[in-house]
Length: 119
Image (cartoon, rainbow, N blue to C red):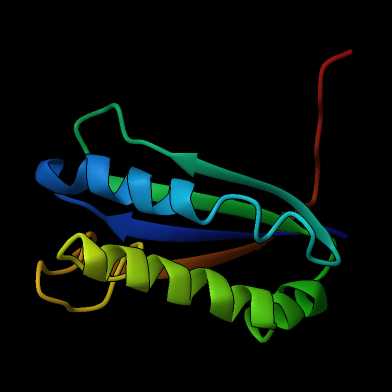
């Protein structure tokens, strides 16, 4: 049964472009992870300041292996280095010279019980 992880990032209007740039800079690193099924960065359009980082995994174990992998560490290190070069920190969090792109973060976890796609 697939699992979904949603990282909820609180992002001010001034930092929207920056957080999207940071995530684009890490593109491609998670796609080769064993058990990875999908990724989406969701931009709020209803007046909220919360971005959703949606990932889907074959199992909880696959997700945990990804978070402990070199590719995960490399992606976060690259985001931090890119942000430092631009005067900020991390792709979504952390504290650097320019401050974090997100002011808060929480992780939601779900099991997929039902799923449908186009016919």
